[in-house]
Image (cartoon, rainbow, N blue to C red; front, side, top):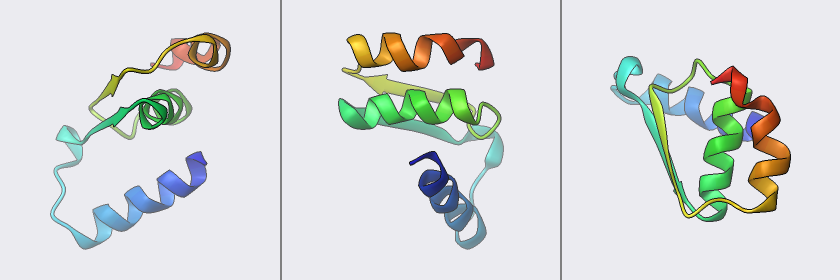
Length: 70
């Protein structure tokens, strides 16, 4: 899934006027989980993330071990 989001981000950067230093990712619920996941997988892609209503066992199990990447 991270590779799909990386390709989408590349497309956006190539075809739109994007300020790379101000790009922020957000999501609600499942999309918030993927915001966390993408941020820890590729920490230099975004200026910040704003996940909303993501949590529970999935975040603790999959994201916390990688949080040092942030």
